[in-house]
Length: 291
Image: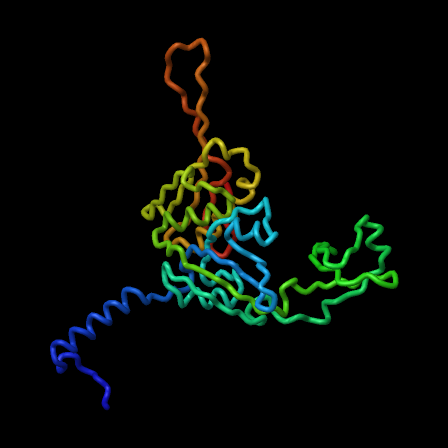
């Protein structure tokens, strides 16, 4: 049977059916591209044991005894190609569609790598006692700024493992693409939410002007003293320059309103307006500079 190369030569009913199928396929099968912004929810387990090791769901984290009070549990932003999730998960996400969920098995080489015997070290017990650290097998410690797991304590020496705790493990991900972010404003708010660790990015007013190559972010008064935000401004600006086309300058604007005095019956609030040190411009070949 030869290949069909000309739909015009087909009977009307067959041609119509093929056209309808192509339209349906085109509507629902739209793999993502590099730098696409998607919102993802997932739960990851170790294939061998079924133990939950990571999740975006607070209830699942509590049930699995891995709940972290400092973490915000909710679907996360994934910018494809950014490398913030394991390689096997990112590859699978590129082939998924908005609203789709899958169960994915990821081998060690596409997760946290195979175990490397050279990353096992024996350290004298006295070194831990100097630092007032009680070495207990299974405990995670930090040595010279590098996290490691204590595997064994014997003969006055401590066996320390610098492999990732999940190295050598095959993982099972139950994952769903919740949303595909398409507009610049959606993308900026998602980046802002991630960098500033805020639950409510809508309280930041955003103005995008492609004519001025400008993105302006108004910081709410309630967040002005948040030190984490002040430190994150430059990193956020870098991400905006990288992912939002046509933007060469980012301005973080802060406004303070003078409070009415108790003795005043009436009077307009006087606005004191100023631009913070978050005025960041894109520099060709250099880091964004602040003025």
